Length: 540
Image 1 (tube, rainbow, N blue to C red):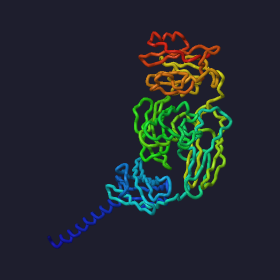
Image 2 (image 1 turned 90 degrees about the vertical axis):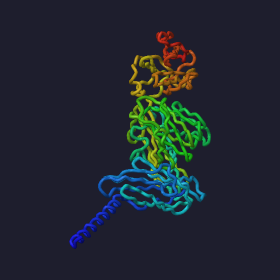
Image 3 (image 1 turned 45 degrees about the horizontal axis):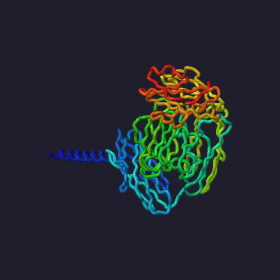
Image 4 (image 1 turned 90 degrees about the horizontal axis):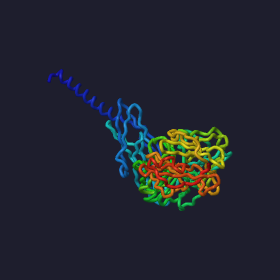
C-alpha cells in the first residue's frame, strides 16, 4: 500500500464506520413512544386506572410492532401486534382491580392493552403497595420499554358512579300524557360524588342512532328469587334453567341456563356483567348453528357482546345459552332503521344535580308521549360525575289510540301461507311487504273480554308458515323453528253471540298450516291438508 492509499483507506474505514453507526441509531430511532412512563394512580378494590400512549414511526415507511405481557403476568393471548406508518398507533391501557371487597392483602388484577380493535388481556395477583411494571414494545426496527406505575390500596380511593337501572324500556304504550320512571344514583367508591343529569348526551350511546333497547330489568323481583321477564317482554322472552334475580336482572349460574327472545332484526348487541372469572356463551339466530360469543369488556366489569351479524328483514328468534360460568344480563340492543328520536323537551328530569357519599339519590324521569305519532322511539338520559359517566337508553313504541272493543282482522296471503293481523300498519313493512292483502277476514275481541283468550301468532321463516293458538304454549304442537309474533287480539273460547269457528288444517308432508273460517277448508283437502281442529270462535 502506498503512502497515498493509506490515508484514503483510513478515510474510507472511518466513513464506513460512521455509516454503520448512523444506520444502527437511525433504525433504533424509527420506533418512538409518546411516553416512557404512565402513572395509573391509586387503585382500591374494584377500581380501574386508564391511560393512552402512541407508538410512532420516526423514520420513513412503516414498522411492525408487538407487545407481550410483562414478567409474572398470565396472558390470554400470546401478544398484541400492529403497524405504525404515517399515523401513530393509539394504544389504550386499562388496569382493573377484580377484588370486590376490601380486607384482604392481595389484589387480583387485570391488565388490558388494546389497539386497532385487537386486545391483549393478562392477569396477576399483587399485594398492597407501589408497583412499577415494565411493558416491552418490540419492532423490526428496535425496541422500547414503557413503565406502568400504580399503587394498590386496601380501601377505595375515589368516587365511583353507580346507576340503576342501566336502561329504560317502556314497551308498547298508548300515547298517554305522562309516564314516570326513577333512576337511582349512588357512590360505590370513596369521597364525595358530584353528579349531573340531563336528557340526551354527547357521543355514541347504546340507545341512539336507530337502535331499539330491550331492558331485562324487573324491579318487582327480590334478590335471589326466580327471575321473571318484565311485563314489557312477557310475550317476547322465554327462559329455561335456574335463572335468579340479581338487583332485578337475570343471573345465570351454571350449565342449563338459556333464553330465547324475539327481535325485529339487524345487528344485536347483548350487555351485562360477568359474575365469574370464566364465561362462555353461545348464540344462534332462528335455526342457524350456534357460535361462541365474544365478550368485549367495558367499564365496571361490564361487557358488550355482538351476538349476531346483520340479519335479513323480518322477525327473528335469538337463542342464547350459558355454557360455562356465571353471568348477569342487563339488556339487548337491536338496530332498527324505523327507530326515531322523540322531539326536544319530551323528557324532563328532577333533580338535575346532587352530591352523595354513601346515600342513594333518586332522579325522576317524566316522559310526555301525548304528541308522539305511532312508531318506535329511542332517546337517552346521561348521568355525568367526577366518578364516571353513564348513558341510559330510553326505548318505547307508541301503539296509537286506546284498544277498541272489537278488532277488525285483515288477511294477507303468500302462496298457502296466511298472515292475520289487526294492525297491518304496525307490522314491519319489510315483513308484511312480501304478502298480498286479500281483504277483511273476521273480527276479534279487545283485551279483557270475558270468555276470551289471546290469539297468539307464530311464524316459521324456514318453511314460510304461520301458526295460531289460544294457548301461549301452542298446545301440543311442536313449534321448533317458529318465532313468536305476539297476540293478534282476543278469540272467544266458547261460542258467543255472533261468532263462528276458526278452523285449523295441516299438511303433514310440508309441515304447513292453513287457518280459515270455511268449514270445507277452502278446498285445501285436495292439496294434502287434513282437518286438525278448532282454534276458537271469531266475530263475523
